[in-house]
Amino acid sequence: MSGAASYHGGLSAEEQVARHYTDRGLIVAARRWRGQAGEIDLILRDGAVVVFVEVKQSRTHDAAVTHLTPRQFARIYRAAEEFIGHEPAGSLTEVRFDVALVDATGVIRVLADARPD
Image (cartoon, rainbow, N blue to C red; front, side, top):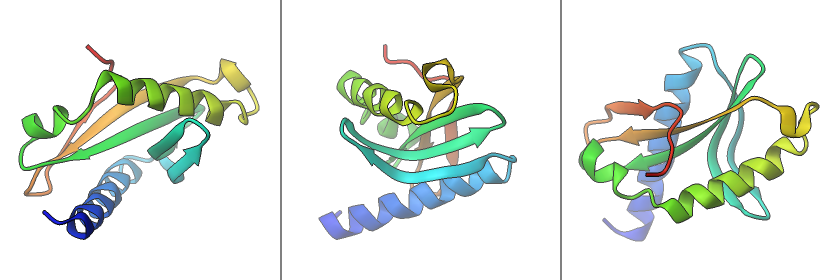
């Protein structure tokens, strides 16, 4: 897949995932939020909980999950810390980290409360 096709495919996957969450009542707080530490694909609100979502797209869910590295998790955590620094409760804000996998057919699989292993 070319760089442009990959970029647009990623945008499409992020849009699908955003709809997946909003259909379940979450509110999109930010898309492709960029802080000093890096970018977070989606940030949503589930009541008082801030949900940080990394979107990974590939032919299969198994292939998509291999694209997420411990280094990326560390970057997401640092960026999330920066984001919640601006929340009213600051570091006491309840958060969750999800990984949303999108396969070639558009099927979404969410790994809620994902942790690097």
